Image (cartoon, rainbow, N blue to C red):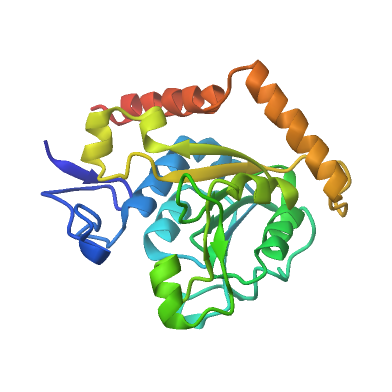
Amino acid sequence: MESFCPACDRGVDDFEVGLRGRPRAKCPNCDALERHRLVALLLRAHQPVLAQARTVLDVAPHGPNRRSILSMTGGRYIGLDIDTRTGPSVLGSITELPFATGSMDVILCMHVLEHIGDDETAIRELARVLTTTGIAFVQVPRRSGQLTDEDPDAPAAERVSRFGQADHVRVYGDDFERRLYAAGLFPAAVYAEMFLSREDVYRFGLQPREHLWICRTQRTESDHFPTRTETERRLAQEMARRRRLELDPPVRIVRGLQRRLRRLRRSRTP
C-alpha cells in the first residue's frame, strides 16, 4: 500500500526516519512530521470552518501546516512569531498577543506552549483573542500516566533529558486539559485512532495515539477571564456532562470528523 502525505497531498514510497530513530516520521517531499500530517487531516475535516473564517492565527508557523491553511482559508492568514526565521507576518509574543479581544476565528498553536515559561498567560491570551464561536487547534508533547514536569530554570542538558529538547521548559502530562480549562479554553482531545482505520493510520504515517486538542471558548463577556472558582465549577460541570453523555472520548466530535472525511473521500473520487 502506497503511503500518502496529507500535508503536501502527494504519495510517497515510504516516510523517512525521524529524530531519535523514529520510524516513518518525515515526508521526503515536504518534511512534514507525523503531527503535521495529523493537523493537515483535521484541517481538511474542518475546511468549511476555515473557508468561512475571517481571520486565522498561526502561532510559530511551520511550512507544511502553513501551506495547508493557506490552501483552505478564505480570510486573512496571520503567522505570528518572535523569531523572524519562520517568516511570520507579525512579530510578537504569545504571552502578549498584539490583537484585539475576540478577533480570531481560527487559531493554530502547535508545539509552542512547551517552550513558554508562563504558559498560563499564553493560554489566556489564546482564549482572549478567540471569538466566542471560533476554534483553536492546540498540540503539545504529552506523557500519559503522569503529571506535567516543568522547570524553566533547568539547565539545557537537564532539559534534554527531562523534556526532550534543550529549548523545552516542560513536558505535559495528564493534567494538560485542566490547564486549558483553568485558562479559559474548553478542549476536546482527538487522536488518529479515534476517526481513522488502522490501515489509514499507517498509510498517512501517523502516531495512533498522538493527541491534538480542539478548543472553544464560552466567554459571555469578551474581556472577562474566569476566576479560579468559576473555572473549577465549569470543569466539574463539563466533566459531569461528559460522563452523562458518555463522551469520554468525545464521540460526537469523532463522528463529525468521520462524516467529513467520508465526504472528502467521495469528492476526490474520479
